[in-house]
Amino acid sequence: MTVPYNQEKIIKGISASPGICIGKAYIVDTEGVNVVEKYFIKNANIKQEVKRFKTAVKKAKNELRTIIEDAPEDFRDHVNILETQVILLKDKMLYGRTISTVENEGVNAEWALKKVVTNVRNIFQNMTDSYLQERSSDIVHVADRIMRNLVGIQQVNIKNIDKRVILVATDLSPSETSQINLEKIKGFLTDRGGKTSHTGIIARTLEIPAILGLENATKLINNDDVIIVDGISGSVIIQPSEQTLIKYEYRKHKYYQYMAAITRSACSPAQTTDGSVIKVLGNIELPEEVVSVHSHGGDGIGLYRTEFQYMGRPDFPSEDELFDKYRDVIEVMAPNPVTIRTLDINGDKARTAASVAYPEVNPALGLRGIRYCLKKPEIFRVQLRAILRAAAFGNVRVMFPMISNYHEVIESKRMLDEAAESLEKDGITFNRDIQIGILMEVPSAVIMADLMANEVDFFSIGTNDLIQYTLAIDRGNKQVAHLYQPFDLAILRMIKSLKDVASEKNIKVFMCGEMAADPIHLPILLGMGLDGLSMNPQSIPTVKRAIKTLSINETRQFVEDVLKLTTAREVFERVHDVYGSMLSCEIPFNNGDNNK
Image (cartoon, rainbow, N blue to C red):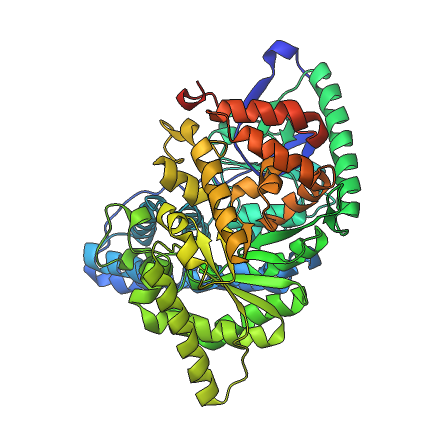
């Protein structure tokens, strides 16, 4: 049943997985999990209370093991996520601290668990790295499972839903998402979560529309309400009018028709109208995502973030563990390249958020990326050895992040040579003949590019941090986020300067930041002569299609004209006027002071 147009309600969230679905809401009830009362335990009963907690943890572990064993074929590539949650169940920052709180404060296990989780979640969410912020959701999901067992609430059993619905939940864990039956569940919405959460990753792999971070969807939507999920814009329409339903049924049809067409053509090279072939590669976090890169027509892996291998565990991964993960990806992608970025977070935070001995006032400018690895050579050496060993099984490139000066490049290469020498001494098969690149995300590195180009085989532009550092803008700060503009002339001049230096030194330049995934930027990036673009796998077909409509010669002249402009708004309008209809993109523009 629909309602009058003026009564429909629209709420906005974070688009985690694109697509459009229309149907009735199914509220996933979590009542009771978050309502916990505190009471004190007598000294004589403390051991029994600890035992009760341990029993709840053991039951949670068994539940996850059952889910892993029964995982449907569509989810088989992501059981690694659930394995990580099994490890988290016994992690000392969750398991150990909860037991200590029960023993030291004499409180019930539910209250102790809630206190520990709140503290740990706050630590994660105060980190500047969005990837790390999202890892707090893993802690919450594991704690919720334990909490349900403590308070006696039945676990959500999504796989038993027997009607075509759209799930609406406070949150969905990866284990719950893994039970989604695609014949029954059209899409899902959650109050919590973000694009880089594991739930979001799974949604994109299943290619099911999903919007996260809605905050109050469970309060505004009732069971059996008709809702529209627009996973493209991140909008949810509650109780739509008949006119709106007709409009979105048409949009849905056109969207899936369009996606089917461009996905079919994505396996062919991205060749411009004047014959230049641009490599379009995928960014991945999990080894399992290599399947998505393949299915969306990726020409290789332009950025393999290795941080996930270090997350949610009490120790660092061994050389053999890393080698196995790298080898899996490399063999699947062969003969296409796999660019492995070395560890790009503070290693202490990578192990356990609570183990930071010296909290940093400004972590974004602190001990991260290559700075941490050079300070902790024993950790860096293990990863380099694993990369060199895996390189014997395919086409591997190594990339060092957060480079800010020439010395860091030299030291990183020296460490790579030492790793190769130690492998040779140990009689272990490896391949040292791999390309070396650096992530250009710090302005000082761009300024020193002429010297650094003598030491490496390629540059890869990380636009997310480069824009943030160059314009002195925290895009997570709502007060200044509107100033974060990829079209800012300072950014465009910096990219052009970097490419000019690389051409003179005969090395290649790639881009792996979010700027690469948006078709509206392509005329400028191609006009500047970038050799390849890397992005989330789902964006590959759209970008390839757009490249096939462009001419390199025409975009070169276009860039010369654009660089004479003065503001980001002028650049956007020029691109939109000349190429908007060709690229078929209507992209909203943030109106900020820098556009005037």
